[in-house]
Length: 60
Image (cartoon, rainbow, N blue to C red):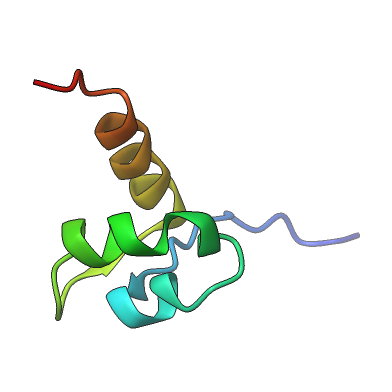
C-alpha cells in the first residue's frame, strides 16, 4: 500500500529581474520595471494581480 503523504503547496518566489526578463510578462515589462521593488520576491499570482490592478486604474 502506498503511504498517504500530506501535500503542502510550495509557493515559488521570483525576483524583479527574473519576472521582467520572462517571456510570460514580456508585454508588461515596462510596467513591471516601474512597479516591482528590487530585492523583493513575488509569486506569479502576485505579479498578475499587480498588473491587473495597475491596468484597471482610471486615468486622471
